[in-house]
Amino acid sequence: MFDKYLEEYKINEQWTTRGRTITESDLVMFSAFSGDWFPLHTDEEYAKKTQYNQRIAHGMLVLSVATGLLHFEPEIVVAFYGMDKVRFIRPTYIGDTIHLALNVIDVQVTNSSQGIVTVQLEVKKQTEEVVVAAQMKLLINRETATDAD
Image (tube, rainbow, N blue to C red; front, side, top):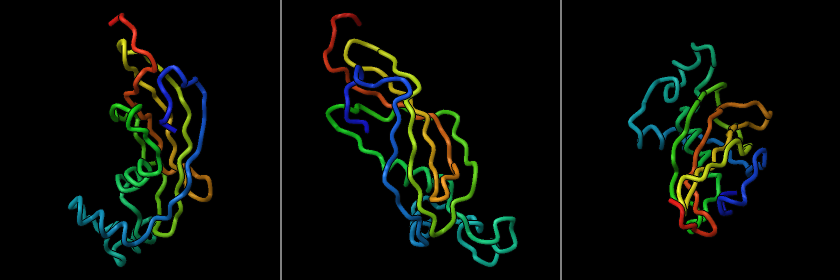
């Protein structure tokens, strides 16, 4: 995915990732790591009384797992530059399998050696419903540095 130099990305280029199933262990470990013990994620009895009728994964857990499904080539990707317009659209339940659909929406040269690739990222579950949407930006090396900075 992110294994090409800046000049190689094309607007509307698309790809999808493999899937990964969200487990109860994921919720417990993420709660422990983040300190987020909100009962909707950790209390079965509480969650049964909500509109979801069961525990749901933390939105940030889903987004974190999603980034783990991406491939970043270290010699090409300089850094994760940020995310815009992040939306948690639908719940992700224990047992849901998520994958990503990505679409390149912008390629910008920022200096003689690097630029920013922006992708529309959709985290989808096995039903193809979008659960998280965002625009993700990565700082990417150019294949050949120019003298103009």
